Length: 418
Figure 1 (cartoon, one colour):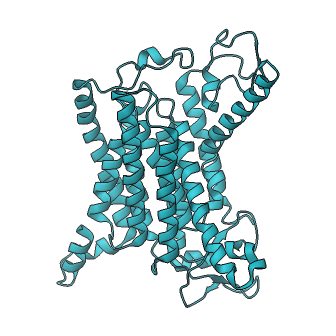
Figure 2: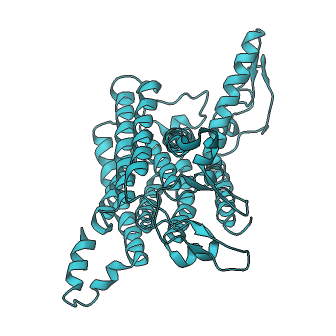
Figure 3: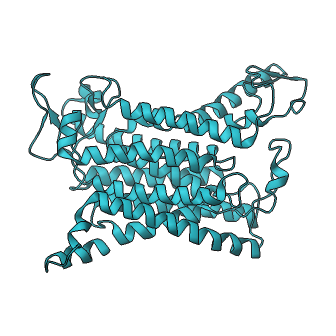
């Protein structure tokens, strides 16, 4: 809203009004504003939740050895993140931008889905919303995002063209709808999903878009659930997510800048500069939330925050046509999901033989690092019995942050390493 106000005032030569046309200025302003809102609102929210005894269900002490100290800690802290993100974006963002509207939709939709789950856990059953219903909610959002990107006339790219390795990269002058995506570490690194269906002849473009819609749906569900699994320790998900957002913001900015896109030989995606404003607000909200969520946590984000976080990361990657970088950027989320799948598979194999098999001591993977000696029954066969001792929760969280820093840096390096 303020963006349009100051753009109007700029017509009258008001000093300073032109600043609001600069992405860098609005991005930094949203970062600072969201940080202030999250810290201010977070304190009020925690006090309000404690007065109303709105806390997470008692944790299983056999799984979480630090669970006793977390008794009575308020949940639904994701509301802090959502509020501190949405308010600065509404104030400082260019709200006619289709990508910004999709990010707001993602945040509110998955935030509402997570809120319902958290509310049921507190008031009805500790099991929360049935997993099927959560998957349906995520799928509906993913399908909506995919269809909008397919049908919206504003969701276009300028494909990069390079006649020879020595010539400067140029772009097709006419914007076009495209299912192109970037393949990491590959020299000629653009792939169109439509090319996967060349055998369909004239229908390959339609098939490519249909595949794209379902691919987006899968990514939203996968990354959202991955972040949900990662939310199990003080500061874990919020810290990892704040780190992951930074390379996404860089990718969004260079994709929207014709000069940088040409230098890096990536497709030019006009309009993604508004994602930088959103992502900086999101980063400030996450850092402000860490003020209260860092060990020992005064509030938990709950599914209200974790589901929205994963969706935001997935949709950003899709909009910038960099979704194949998600395994690097979200390596920790991927590891959490894979660990659960491996654990489940190995347990089923053991059950068929009448034995107790486990791949890790616990799953998701972060839980295996806080298992105390003697907690695992002797009749259990653990395939990967490491580490031998229980780590402090703060150490586990910090080491996961370090891994995320490394993989996120590698994701940025792929812009030059091909």
